[in-house]
Structure formats: structure tokens, C-alpha cells
Length: 467
Image 1: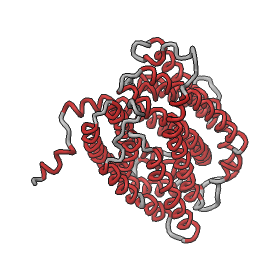
Image 2: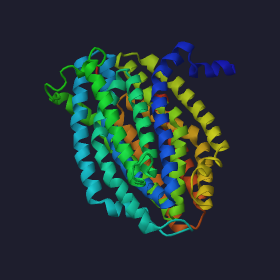
Image 3: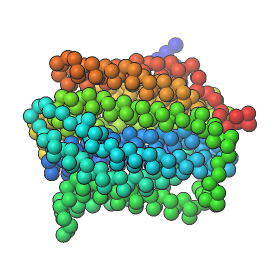
Image 4: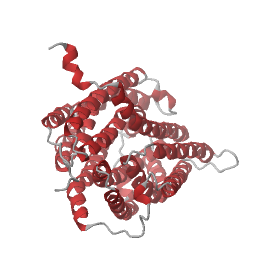
């Protein structure tokens, strides 16, 4: 067999890539612009001081857990949304949306309560002496000020996520992108005004950054909700959606059975990532600041392969709902190969400019050196994490949520988190060596994911007549 014959199953035709990019590009643009603004936001807060940047970074770690719980909870219902839409069952789509509204409201109440009650000990977990950078007390105070305002933005966040996720699952990816772009512009403009006190506004520092973010979330929410209810011809689920909030009991049980592992998985995975970063933080505030720079920059460059995972779940979910199983298997091979190739390319860019990105920040040389090293390590591992991401979304699209739970968060808590705790607590190894070991141990997960995908355990229609 020639090389061309070997690779042909992993390469699609022009029509396939046009269709795929029609879904992926709007997601890439929205997420890319969001992360670009996050980078600029980081730079502007960092210009005020390293303590301010570290305080914001710590709070964003906590909000990251809440955000992923919302994503995971809505994704559980979203598996059914995509398959109902592939089946052309608009009532089923509406019922899954109502479930999302109930669940997001519950998560909102729970998240606000926890962040209000336990804010001081949660922020304090990341504050440790070490290195030459940072004031612990000032960092804690800036973090609390930032959190108090950010809590006001959680309501519009959960509402717009319920709407935007449903729109994407029925193929309406442009509207969330456009709303996201408007929100990004609002965020960026008001960051500039409120952080530094331009145009007659007071210089609010970290509180200004939070206020700009909250304002942008209300704007984004208003655009998405308003458009959806004005275009019920394209968003059929919204027609009369609030005449009743009842969700059929049988469907509720199905979504909980299939979807709850996703919510639990996202919670455990996000807390696991937070614990990994907490382990790194025991080496001093310089590491916290470097981690903040690394995650912000890498998130900007990783949007390409991350959008591929979301696109994969939409494309394959609709094909499974239409019982096009061979086509779904073919799509997975092609999208996964494309995603890993793109990740390798973005990794090269990240490595080449690893020394330049930290120079954009007004921080110490210690922080810049650590950030540059972490960026190179992250760049090398990009194709591995793209493969993991594609495997995860493939398994999820077929409703194999218990497998994704074991594959994702259980692996993290059983192997990665204890490994980081041991290496940072017992050894005196350099933090970059520890960071590299904890990054590259995920190659085991990548191999396991590809084996599960190849076996086809995910090929299942969960909204068929027998479901």
C-alpha cells in the first residue's frame, strides 16, 4: 500500500472542508477574538502591576471552574439537541433548551453562593512565598475586588450560553460569533477607559477590568436573546418557548443519565486544572504570573484546534442522529487528522514567538523567563492535546459520557494532580521541568482516546425511535 493510499482515509475533499470550516471558522473567530481581548486585558491589567495581574489570574481560575460547569451541563443536553436537529425533531430541540434554562439557573445560584462564602480561602490557596516577585496581601485584596464585580456578570453569561449553545447545535454559528465580536469591542473599549481612567472616567484598575467584562456580557446576552426571538423561522425552538418550562420526564431522565457525567467531568476537570496550577503556585507568585501569561497566550493560539472539537461534535452528532454511521466514522478520522495538523502548525508559531509574548507585559524578568519556557513546553504538546480534544468530543457526540468521564477527569485526578503535588512538594526540581512532565504525561490519554475512537464505541443514535 502506497503512502497516498494510507493517508487518503484521513483527507477529505474540498466540499467536506468547506462544510467543516463553515461551522468552525465562526467559532474560531469568536473564540480567537475573545482570547485576543483577554490577552490585551491581561496586558493592560499587568501594566498596572504584577500583584493586580496575579489577583485577576487567581480569580479567573475560580471562575474557570464555574464556566466549565456551565459548559459541561449544557453540553449534556446539547448532545440531544444536535441529534434531535439531525432527526428534524424541533419539539425535541425546544425541550432540550428548556432543560438548559433550568440547569443553568441552578448552577448560577450554586456558583454565586460558593464564591461569595468561600472567596478568601479559595483565593488564599494560590498565595505562597517564593521567588523575588509579588506582595501576597496586595494580590489577595486585588483578587477580592475583581471577584465582587465579576459576580454581577454570571447571570447574563449563563443565559447567553443556553441560547448560543443551542444556536450552534442547530447550525446557526454566525450569530453567536457576531454577538461575541460586539461584546469584545465593548470590553476592549471600556477596559481602556476604566482601567486607566481615560475620557474623564476614574482610574479603577482591576475593578475597571471587571466592570468592562460585566458590561460586555450584558451586551452579548441582549444581542443573542433578541435575535433568537425575532428570527423564530430560523431558530424554531424559540417560538412560544416560555409558554411552558415543562420538560418531558423521560427526556429529563435521559439527559441526566447521559449529560450528568459531562457536568461532573467538567467540574472535576476544571478543579483538577486549578489544583495543578495551585501546585505550581507553591513555587511563588512569579510562577502564578508566568502561568497567567502562558495560559492567556496559548488559549489565543489554541482556538483553531479547540474549535475543531466543537465542530466535530456538531457534524458527527447530526450524522449519528440521521443514522449515517459510516459517514460519521469517516468525518471523525478526517477532522481529527486536520485538527492535529493545525495544532502542530500553531505550536510552531507559539514556540517561535515564545520569547516575544512575555515582553508585552510590564513584569519582572523572572516572570518573563518562566513564561517563555512554559510557552515552548505547551507548544510542543499542542498536537497531543488536539488529539485528546478530538477524541473527547467524538466519544461525547455518541453519548458515551461515562467513558469521557473516566477518560478525562478521572485520569487527571488519578495521575496528573498527584504527580504535580509530589513533584512540587517533595523534589527541588525546577518548575519548568515539573511543568513539562505534567504536560507530556497526557500522551497516555491521547493514545487511549484514539484506541476508543478507532473501536467505534461512540457510534450510537441516542434519539432514535428506540431511545
